[in-house]
Image 1 (cartoon, helix red, strand yellow):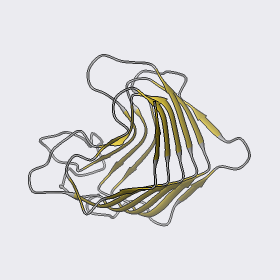
Image 2 (cartoon, helix red, strand yellow):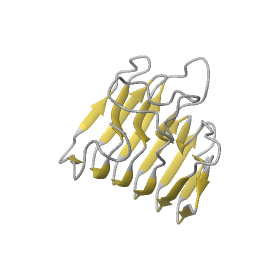
Image 3 (cartoon, rainbow, N blue to C red):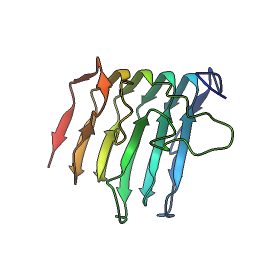
Length: 171
């Protein structure tokens, strides 16, 4: 699968006390959204990651993550880990390691991350890989709360036309 040709018009919606607890399983990832379009994640509590990410996005467009709560991590050796990671898949960065998806350098476009809470994490949202001349576009980080973040709240590496506004940062 290449481009934005995988899942489309998918919703993952939590009601009540819906929780995805990674139980500090090493390199665990709760949700992966790759080569997808028009998908949303709303109202879910994510707990206790260890060396992975709660949500990993790559090669996707028109994605919305709203009213979620992200908390807790166990530090692993190596790089800093994000609650929400946004990357461009290519063969050099090896960001997308599955048999069904292509490392075709498709960028993320129009990603909305609004009204979420990030608490007791290494990093809230970010990208860590660089793909030459390919930029994730229109990433909107709006009205989120970041508390007790050990590294940085938002790491906007290789983003273009991003909006980061109306967020709260404590400690």
